[in-house]
Length: 246
Image (cartoon, rainbow, N blue to C red; front, top):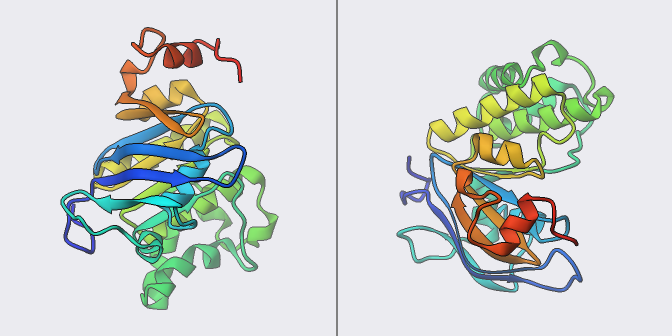
């Protein structure tokens, strides 16, 4: 797939630094997320995973370094990142209005007609199992339903980069399976998909590659099935084995 810039959509971060907080700092020499694959991010709480996601989404500027598509030397601005990406946060919120209206906003903002935006939104709601709640006030949704609505909104935007920060943490097993299936479909059509998860089984189950971040640094980025208790890096072995104290 190609982005709106015409470059192959392998996203790279170079010498990326974000400071100013005791925790959640980032200092990454190089990080890569490839199109058509699911990249999972693991690591202790406060290690900088969510900070990295906000940088990739263009919600915060880095203090140093840059983010770019491969084969394109021009750094992506915050505005470009906001255009090319969509982020589902750990605790998403809904605006006033129905579930359907919430999901229609992204295509409407892109200039798509109201009937077509409605059709797009309903398709996305069906994917996440919320079609029956389309006319319900979004403010009445449960925590798990809000997460699924946030994912439906992200799907409706149809961005090149899908960023998910603990997007299945509050879901029951059947909905986790549903959402993982949707995520796989997004990667299969050539999108860049990144997922922050504390569920190591999930990282190995759906991830093509897994990045382990510790104290703001990228300790390793390998094939997901290789990030296990027999990994060559001692920190990785301790983390996945539950021995890492933090």
